[in-house]
Image (cartoon, rainbow, N blue to C red; front, side, top):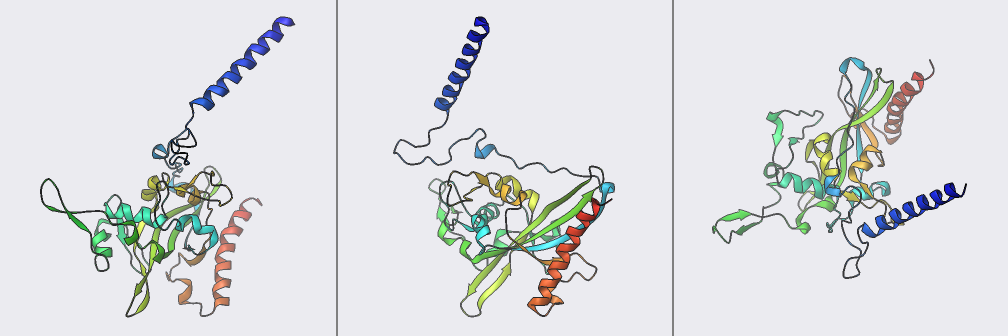
Length: 292
C-alpha cells in the first residue's frame, strides 16, 4: 500500500514538472518593450496553418443539390471581422486587403465578372491591371542596382478597402447518399467595389470571381479579431467561412431562367417571400431526410 502511495506521488510530481516546463518553454506574451507580442506562436504557427480539407464526394453519390447565391454585407456587425482593420496592422488585415495583395502579386487566378454567369476557364482569366487599370496607377521606383523603373506595392492607404462593402458568394447545398451527409460548400466569391465617381456618384462594380478553394490557403493564415471582449480569441478568416460565422442573404438561386430575385420581384415583401421560399426548400429537404 505504501509502495503504491509513493508511486502516485512520483507520477504526480512528474506531471507537475512537465506542466511547469511547458509553461516556461512557451512563447512570451509580452515582448522586450513590454508590449503584447504580435504573431505569438501557438502549437501550430499561423504560417503553417492549412485549411481543413473537404471531403470530395463521388458525383454518383450526390442525389440532391442546389446552387444558391448570397450577398455578404460588411456593414452588418457580424461581418465586421471581414471588414476591419481598414488599414492593415502587423498581424491582421481585412478580407479585401488580403485579396488585393494576392491579385496585385498575381498569386491567385481571378476570373472576369459577367452578369448572371460565372465561367472559370482560361479564356475568362483577368489581371490586376485589367480590373484596376482605369482607376489606379501602379506606383513605381528606380531600382538602386540596375537603374530600371520597377513596380512597387501599393501603399495601404491606396487600397480601396472601405469602398468594398459587399461580396457575392456562390455556394452549393448537396446530399451525399454514401455517408448520409447534408453539406454546404462555398464555390466562389466576388468582391463588390462601391466606387465613388465624382461625376456619376457611387458606382457598384463587381470586380472578379475567385474560386474559393484557391483562396482558402491564404485565409487560413489570416487571423481575425472576432470579439471586442476577448482579444485573445484566435480565429482565421477560413474558420469564419467554414463555420458559417457570417451574416448573408439570398439574392439568386440556380434555375432554368437564371434570374436574380430582383428581376422578378418588384417589392421588398415579394423579395422577402422568395428568399424564405428558397431557404425553406433547403431546410425542408434536410428535415424530410430524417422522417423516413
